[in-house]
Image (cartoon, rainbow, N blue to C red; front, side, top):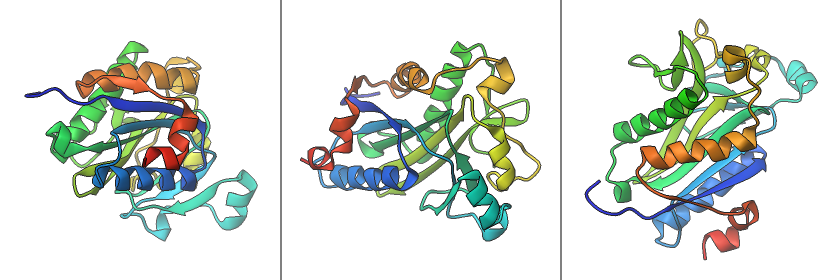
Length: 234
């Protein structure tokens, strides 16, 4: 980097419904674009939900409403890029809301650093992973996806982010065509290594790798500070 970067505020939010986290990201984006906000890394879990990105279609949803109800899984059509994916307990979700102009990053550079942060964290867990082949986003191991990535750009401000499967119930992916590829299946840290990694602990350990990849310090903030939108935009 050619100049010193501001710190990124990071926060572990616990379990947050998808729509609530989506609204929070929108507030953070507006604050950044208006010159009133801070670059922020949100780390959290979601209750069971299928999210359908801009490239998704109804054909990507394989369970009917009855099965969705039985499994207690919501369906949300999102404004992020990509197709269908699943979020749920045991999955570390990260939403960096960053002004890429301030970081002097292009979208390909941003995605490369985000993938690198995840790969380096997985390496710490003893798992060798790699970026996807051309046309395949996310982080992979042996042809199976460990982490999905889907982002949205609002001028120079990026939002949405990644979902890393730790102890995720992979059976829920049977309800969708994940990321538009019926033949490519997800996996998890637990499935690969047998390790049961706590999501909150993973959030704080992963944060170190995010800071290293983006060459910026993290300042951890309590969840209530970030969830209180009046403070976020003040």
